[in-house]
Length: 75
Image (cartoon, rainbow, N blue to C red; front, side, top):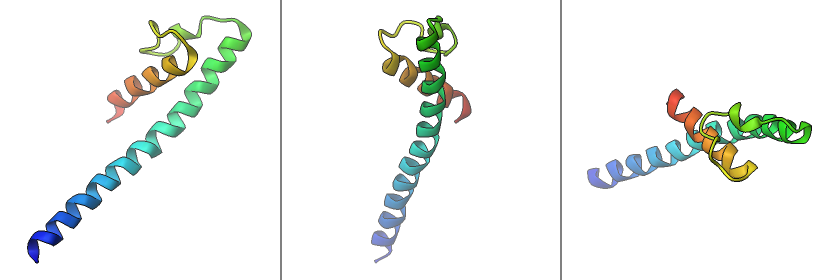
């Protein structure tokens, strides 16, 4: 029975990591997407504002790469 308890605690820690990832990724994505979208509407070069977005072909992939770059610095 001790084995099932350790398995359940390990399973819940994986779930906690997924929730923590989403709670960090989503707000960062929204903020950086807002900045990039505003820059796109104004006609500025927004890719230079976001780290990791320099070589990405479109807005979504550029923001996603930027969020992953940002997250690697804070985690």
